[in-house]
Length: 475
Ligand code: BGC
Image 1 (cartoon, rainbow, N blue to C red):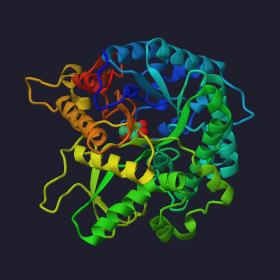
Image 2: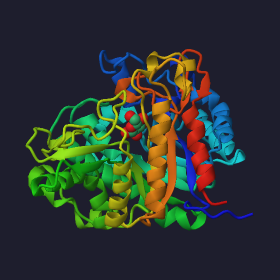
Image 3: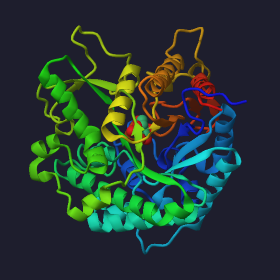
Image 4: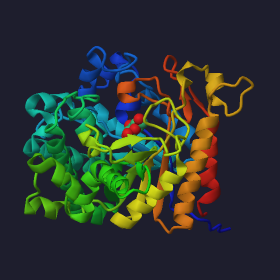
């Protein structure tokens, strides 16, 4: 029987992870696996960089437990799995002339086969922040355009050659904004640089690396392998604080500095004017060759989004936000949504719908939602029993908040598709994992992970989320 609903039959849904956030089972097994260090290993080795002192080498042990994870995702009803390949697991030193780690190749081959065997479409990110440390030492990593583009392109080509017979959905980069700003601007992420010039250079080089790998795929692999490739960008809806012209303009400027920075060059062929005006010659110029390379280099718009901010024009010193002031407050003093574990995250589903409409109208590409999720205040202090349940006798902030978040966001997605005609083709939530500089404290997942025993327990939100798609994707 055919059931036609809002979301198309080939809509992909499931869980999203990244290699550095979930693979590690401990220093010893990581060493044995032959993975080279990434900039995150070095970052975690430094005191005070990770909030709870946890380490990227010991996260969720997915390397050993991937079969169990795939089986669990399948049993929850997912039809796809978004994960990233660790560049230093494949090429420990990272460079184009450096040796390959066969154990790494075997792992990703097995993981992909396991996904396919269980009916999960593998959705693969090539770079989710774990640059091989050696490339950072050799030439400064993302700061050296010529060298990094060459090494990244070689790594990407290796992935297409090795896995492209089975992987049909590729992402070149996850959230280049974070690599540029958090890694090279404010120093909150590896490699921990603080600068007001580096982020713009790194952002530019990431764009060229993206285009170079994507064009290689589109021109040399697509016709035989039949997949698609794109980039995924972070960006939250920016709601003008009120309807004054300055605040409306500021909200657009904040949007330019978040997603326009990367999306405008790729889909519209230039940096946003507001960035050119503010940054002057700190923002590199594209050569004609680079612009041609960027054109049509992303076959879809990959979207990671979590929240919404209210934006005021009132000058702040945050250049990365286009000197706007970001908050959650409305003119009547109320907040636009309930708080989470993290200061930057509030639950605002209507903002999500507006964002989907904005992307659809401005960039005119199919949208793949590649990340979305919620971290509950104080969740890491709860027992597993309290954390996994939506309803609980004791009034603790448990999974109920996440269920609500997912209900709101999935309904907003459905409305955007059904009522606004936005073309959205996937949705991925999370399992608990290593939250970068916040360590293991924020629990973003709809699957609980015990970081001592590595035991996994699905939360009610995992079931609610998958059920929504089961009910709403055409069959
Ligand atoms: C990143 C994820 C991370 C999430 C929540 C996103 O920006 O892509 O790796 O887990 O934020 O912090």
